[in-house]
Amino acid sequence: MKLEFDLSNSSFTLLHCAGLAGLWMTLNQLGKENAVCPEGLHWQLSDRKVILDWEGNDKTVLEWLLKESFQINDGLIALRGLDSQTMRKDAQVIVHQGILGTFLQHTSTHKSTGTKTESLSLGEGDREIQVTYKSLQSYAYQDFADNLCDKNGNLLTKSISIAGWLSPGAVVRHVAFSSDTSFEEPPENAFVLLFAPVACYYYILRSKLRDKRAQYALVVPEIIDLAKYAQYRQNQHLRYATYKDFHASSLGDAGLKFLTLESTINVAKGFAVSRCQVFTLGTVAWATQQKTRTDMYLVEASQEICQNYQICNDWLRDKTVESKNGGFVVTSFARELIAENLARNQPWYSSISDKVNSNELFKQLTYERGGLYQVIQKVKSDEREKLFVKACHEAIKFTYGQISEQANRRREVPNFERETVRIRTGLGRCKNSDTFREFITDFWSRAGKIPTLQEHWEELMEFVMNEKNWKKSRDLALLALASYKGKGTTNDTDEEQVDEDLIDIGI
Image 1 (cartoon, rainbow, N blue to C red):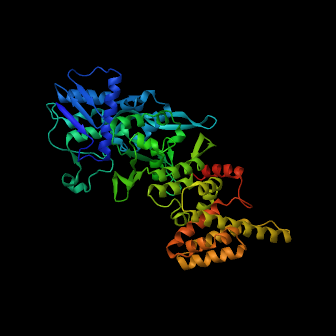
Image 2: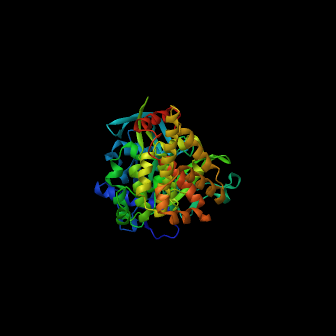
Image 3: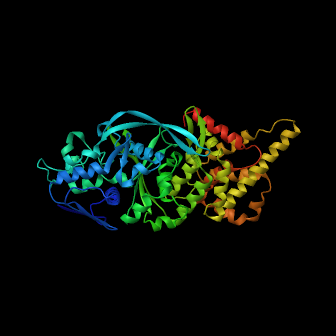
């Protein structure tokens, strides 16, 4: 029997290509270890192809290959293609949890022996977190040879139905018409899909805008060179990362984090990983009996997007705080908003006013005012946008100064919070260009003389008065309010206390 797989196969999706990369990595690792193969089994690996050749019974060879490829180590899924057992324990656990949270969500796909708890490092002074996971006895990949071969042990020649765990999201559309709406693949393609979990990547999602339950993002890379991707997937950032590094605030954040594991865009070019597909799986009301793709992005690593994301990631970091069970990861809300826009190739601040539509969400955004201020200064964008934010910062400063002066005369404590709420709710009432122009001219006029506005009057008026720009201006004004650093803003100690509060409310 001879099987030849090529990345150029017109029937291959991104997941198939990931499976081919996983097969390449697995065979390469078996070769490094000088594994004792069934007699007559050989393989050839190139940048875009994998060729398998063997003599004898097909099922015997496939059973051996799957047994060697998909193992269990101390209850954890151990993938030969990743050389899992030599990885840092954090990485082993996240691969295990990620596969169970995406490919193998249904309990019928695995047998558990109970649960285990591990203390994993969060970095930052050796903080630890207690992680509980299912301990497995077996899982579906290990004995799939039965599905690929007939009763005589020969590889099937007709297409077979593909279960959702083998190709997440590819499910029966109508249970009453399963034979007509099921997803089918040639057995060779199904064999390739088995190895997709080896090449894919997984992140724990903790979002302020989504369901607060921990979910998993499945990252499927676009692979154009099998050897280079194998090197990318085995780099030190993935093999020896801490548990904190496996958290993301959104699908866009997960995709961009994966594509920018190194500090420059040159890595994506050098390792031939410039795009990836990221999606989540869950249960929807109209199909509770199966797992469905609940969201999906195709994220591309252009130079500007990656540079802006790196700035965002540098200044808007996740935090680790203490809780009853050790450490706890709180993901950045500001990075969630920005990364979602970058992943969709939209302006980095787009629609923030629509998403941050309550006092609670705005308050959470202001917890990161220091990092948000730095992002505004450093991100690559239209210079008029930065000037507009600067003018708004000055207007806020002068407005707070007036409040402070009036309060001092009355020997009262200045109420900056009330003015902040007034500005935020005023922005919330802006529903068209006319209402926004009315708001911004009133806001600026109340503040008095604004140096940046006076110096760049023509540029800013052209920007603000353009009917097409009113939503952009509203978003930037809200960001200016959230990132303003001056009187009436919280200090670093307050921000740490806020993180403790997040634990109490279950975020």
